[in-house]
Length: 97
Image (cartoon, rainbow, N blue to C red; front, side):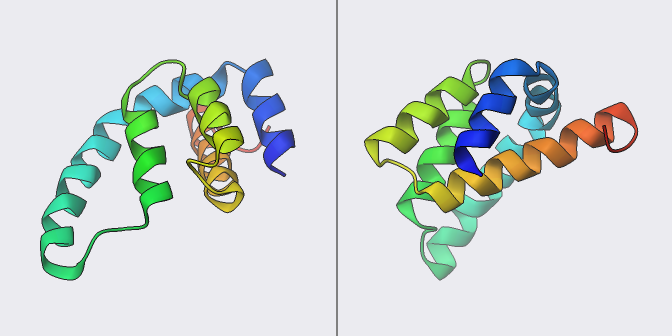
């Protein structure tokens, strides 16, 4: 799934558009989560790494792939990101492709 997700993201620019659309929401959630972490403990390091990579904006797919290869994020985390990006892309397009 992860290899497939990476290949699809590289081919279809809609993933990048979907990511930009959600960037502001993701940033707000990240700030909220920092507040929650002070109360409840921090999320896993690989999840935080992935969020920071996406928060850096355009080019996140390549950076996620590099982080996956280096072990900075787990395959399950990458798969969840690509599934969410796919759902966001479908929302932007008005339904499943």
